[in-house]
Amino acid sequence: MARAGDLSPEEFREAAARVAEWVADYRDRVEEFPVLARVSPGETAAMLPSSAPEDAEPLEAILDDLDRIILPGLTHWNHPGFLAYFASSSSAAGILAEFVVATLGVNAMLWRTSPAATELEARVIVWFRELLGLPEAFEGVILDTASTSSFTALLAAREAAGVDSRELGLTGRSDVPRLVVYVSNQAHSSLEKAAIAAGLGRQSLRRIETDDRYALDGQALERQLRSDLEAGALPTMVCATIGTTSSNAVDPVARIADICAEAGVWLHVDAAYAGPAAMLPEKRELFGGWDRADSIVVNPHKWMATPMDCSVLLFRDRRPFRASLALTPEYLSSDQEGALDLMDVGLALGRRFRSLKLWFLFRQMGAAGLRALLRRHLRLAADFADEMRRDSRFELAAPVPFGTICFRAHPREAANEGGRVSNELEAYNDWNRELMARVNRRGPVFLSHTVLDGRYTLRLAIGSVHTEARHVEAAYRILCEEHDEMAGAGGSAIGEERMTTV
Ligand SMILES: Cc1ncc(COP(=O)(O)O)c(C=O)c1O
Image (cartoon, rainbow, N blue to C red):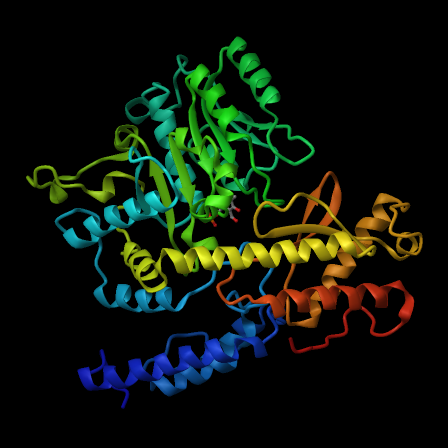
């Protein structure tokens, strides 16, 4: 069956059906795997041949090795017990669309190289923008990740700041003040990377302090802006986050928008994770003021059941984006009047047909289906948060505006005293660190951690299209079991692996 070169049409039909079978089967049996990979570094590599095969191999051999070598070496992001980082899960619509994307293999760099892909991208962004409740003034593009989207926004903001870095660069000049970017001390590291990559440097990133809800403190931002202006710096961008990575904190965007308007500074909103929740009227107030941003990033590949990668960058004015990066070499020039060339917004020339994933998703799930998915997650998160409030062995560590719950367990001594914290901070942190390690070793669920106010904090993030109540309940049960074992009931030592079914 295998032959040198590509498959014949008949062979392809057969192979595609076989792979579809494998995919459907994987979706059925993914819960049989531990969420978190149990391999050690180098273990997978040791099972792989050191050179590429000289002769073609049959599909069955490849699929066998997929099962034998690759699957055991994966952390299963599509496992319903994946509750660690923000989920990136694959809805059926997303999987099917990816298959078509690869089949078409178009590159929508210019309108001419794929008119329908260019125009579909613009249209699904209009759909998305409307669902999010943003004004018509916003248009956008689909990029790979939020890191790229925020970096692209910073390049536009840098251009809008008027230092003409496009022509003159930033080096070897004495006429360029320090360009400064403002984020909260809870902002995602991608903003720091963006400052590095844009040539501003880490020292140009101001990490503004946050309040007791981990939201940016507006007064502190104003103070910092004033002091930078007095020192001759050029405030270039403020990034407000709606749904921080650590604790889902919501920066006061409306207040920040006022500050930006007064100071004439670009406002970028990082709603990479929480953005889809703006589709819910009952969550809209958390997004107050984001409609005044210059740019916004929302990742459908996080909380919107779209397989990696898909990040929507929305903006009000295309001009600074074009001014920062648009460049047309002769071989790509055309006389197509009025056509939109997507390569003009962003660093990459070639681009995947990502809009097809959103088109399939919006049509196969419908806006109602997407809202139902978000509401299911929010309900599960609220229920888990209630357990944390009720159970004296645990405490909530932050408010729960979206699908992520930050919590801590009380060490044994404290639990015996009715749940009050009486331990040294270090013992407290060690206890929670060990608890998380034990839970993750069990297999059915995978949690992550953060540090809030210097305290080790567990994080349970609900956002996968596959996660249901029983998976979150299992996480709670396993947490309780491990906590009680640690508290002295004896039982398995840390490091012992047990697999329980959900
Ligand atoms: C708030 C926030 N912004 C940005 C990012 C970076 O996302 P990406 O992996 O798409 O670059 C993350 C990742 O989790 C995030 O939580």
